[in-house]
Amino acid sequence: MRTILFDLDGTLADTAPDLHHALHCLQRERGLTPLPFEQVRDQVSHGTSALVTLGFPEAAGAVFDGLRERFIEIYMAHIHRESRLFPGMDEVLEAIESRGMNWGVVTNKPAFLTDPLLRAMGLYDRAATVISGDTTAECKPHPMPMLLACEQSGSSPGQCLYIGDALRDIQAGRAAGMRTLVARYGYIDAAQSPETWGADGFIQHPGEIMDWLPAQAGL
Image 1 (cartoon, rainbow, N blue to C red):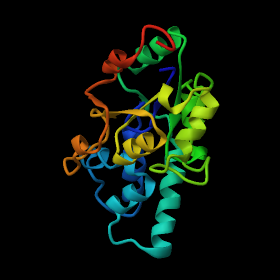
Image 2 (tube, rainbow, N blue to C red):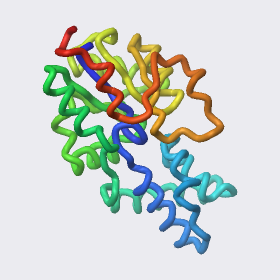
Image 3 (cartoon, rainbow, N blue to C red):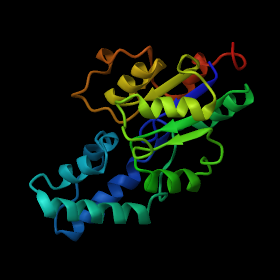
Image 4 (cartoon, rainbow, N blue to C red):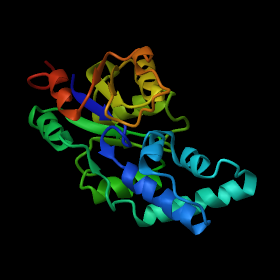
């Protein structure tokens, strides 16, 4: 194993507070009572459209498009208001780097949101690869972005471990030939069954990633 790849929202970083804030502001602008954080958190990994649908279930067509555009506008203005690495993740990244390995991000979040967030968090230049939802012609669960991440990080799929909190993450990693872990601390709602996704393992908090790291690169 030489490369550890992460999904972004709900795996590497806890971005739910800022995405909830954007939806909160949008609902208040439209005269609605904002949804509580607990109701929004587990939907974050499904993207902006899912969040707008959650907050405005009857919106469709041009109305929905306008709401989504405004949601993104609010989110971009506050993209690093509260978002941060999950507790223990900074130590994991340092351990990866200290062992001569590298790490990267493969997310379905579009690059115009991914890149400024990672830069604001001081992570962009540390990552060996950053693949966003619009970097390749296909996004997860297709393996195309995973394979590009391998190429950019200098590792074969068999030398990579991918960690995510959604079914599409595990599907993409497996299709690319990587080992996969489910981040159970991520944005997984009660209706999902991660044990059926076919992952190689599960972690309850970022520190457990340490158990999967070799003593040094290539071992």
